[in-house]
Image (cartoon, rainbow, N blue to C red; front, top):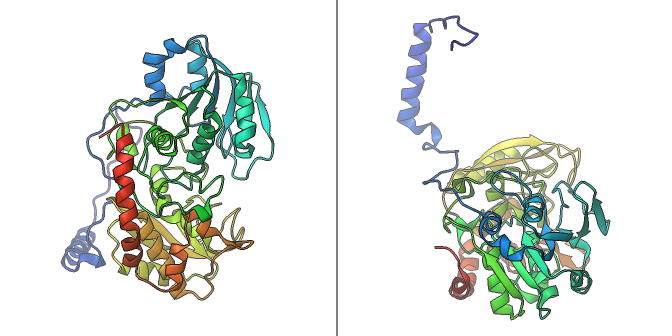
Length: 428
């Protein structure tokens, strides 16, 4: 069928063709300053991955028919067709008596912490408790009402991302009770990066962002993380993990053919979540990481940053997986609300990288370049120490040490963790 617009295109003037050709030849000869860069995410062979939810509904739910369950989930608990887990579970004959929602709430839209202890989801006739406010003891008391707990949340594979801390708390609450915990496994969007970053220093343990006893990037799916914690912490939870089908450890999320449902408000796209891995620790300094903009974690900046100076300096480092461009932006909330910030937009260009190394390089650039840059503190504690689960990053940056000094410190601990955690892998 012909399109509505059928007018022929005007012929391009020959002088324009000659000029364009000349520019192309010139750029090819001098490289125009950069080698060709691919900005689309790389992709290998895609495969249709079935999540733990889909496997459970298709193969195992019949064994749980008639049981009363508590569901730990949020908006990310959907199947390939975007059907919600609570509806699928109920249709399979499982009674969902109550639910628990993590940070950002049941629908994943809350940027600020919800101060309510619970809400009633009238559409689904469901009492939903705010898991972010509960303690282990209060959670254990509430779970006495059920004989089964189902955990189904899209994780990010990072210790500071609060969903894995919630998993740990659920397991601590169920320890020794005999109540079964069923974890419906989902992909690790950062799984292709492997294991990276500092192990948790017990001096910096916190309930929400520094709780799970593993390196910062722990290289496990949420189901494998449950197996690891149960085995290494000895929680004695009656644990069942429902593995995915067709999943591989090196898969990027878009290769799974699953829809990207933003696991939290400031990770709207898969590329933003990859950049997030190397940017989140910068929340420990007086810098905007783009919260309150259309490019959270892809924009970073502050009123005192010269965007052109920073983009030129960072591009000159020739980091293999990233490019930078100068930007100005005005956050609508969070740090520097309604103030003009200079900064850079970060483009991920593909490939495996170390998020800790990337963070460290950015920190060194900011502290070496701008005297206004400083560490944020809450009381007597530095924010970055709690986020990172260690004070080594801050101290080495202050000492102007090279990244390789930190890498040498971490190497023996990460090697030991890789060997231990491999025992709990479900996928090649």
